[in-house]
Amino acid sequence: MSYKSVLLLLAFFTSSLAPVFSQNREPVLKTDVPLDSIRLSDPAILADKKTSMYYMTGTGGMLWKSKDLKKWTGPYKVVKTDPDSWMGKSPMIWAAELHQYKGKYYYFATFTNRDVKIDTVRGNVIERRASHILVSDKPDGPYVPMQDPTYLPAGKPTLDGTFWVDKDGKPYMVYCYEWLQNWDGTIEKIELKPDLSGSVGEGKLLFRASESPWSKERDEAGNIIPNKVTDGPWLFRTKTGKLGMLWTSWIHNIYTQGIAYSESGTLDGPWIHEKDPITPPDYGHGMLFRTFKGKLLLSVHSHKEDKNGRYIRIPTLFEVDDSGDKLRVGRPL
Image (cartoon, rainbow, N blue to C red):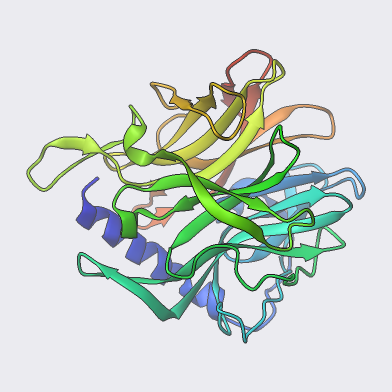
């Protein structure tokens, strides 16, 4: 995918969602909504045993609930940000995930303040955007700020932060450093405080988009080159103990879900990328969760054009086998 094409897609995506992010009124609650009737990017599902409920978040800052993964109730407004913080009064919210840790629930998400510009690269103005964490005592919120006003550098656009406790017992945020500034997107880690209320030290590079054998695009001269995009990291271990990472990029104009494995078994890698994607074309931004009956599922969104040329993103669940050293993705539910 060319730089121009990606920028057009990014502009369409953000502008089309802007009204959802900026409205302050309460959303209209719907019940018994089938999963494939929900329009949602970056769907992440928490299976909460305490409440016997599935909670689905994603882009837009809203939450859906279900007892069976088939019929959903929502959307609920669950986020309370600080209007005096760097996020501003009405931040855009992307790729929210819920994680339960030491008795509390944490909301990992990307927040964008469109009123603050941090850089201009190759004619593209970059807005203030960063991964951040909110906290709640309940899975359905409200989620509120903690101690540190920032987790990552103000001049560095970051996104899609996720959570992992590594073999050293320390909690980490794993996130993307956006390609729009560095021109070769990366996935990095930063240590978190024990209660996740802030970060410790500086981020560390895990790998670059250009290291992937499957993600590619064409430059302005028509040459095939590595794609620049890193998107949606998610960490897991197979039943054999192998550490893996889901992440998403593009094969030309096809949104694609890939996977990499750590040779050391820790976040420090080195990360070895699988040669081929693990899902059919036009699915991405995956995460894993286990149902209350013990079945492992992959949650992704579709990325397909409708008859009007608009991109439609629908949450989709695939069966997964993690019994070996490598994840095997099966049929969709």
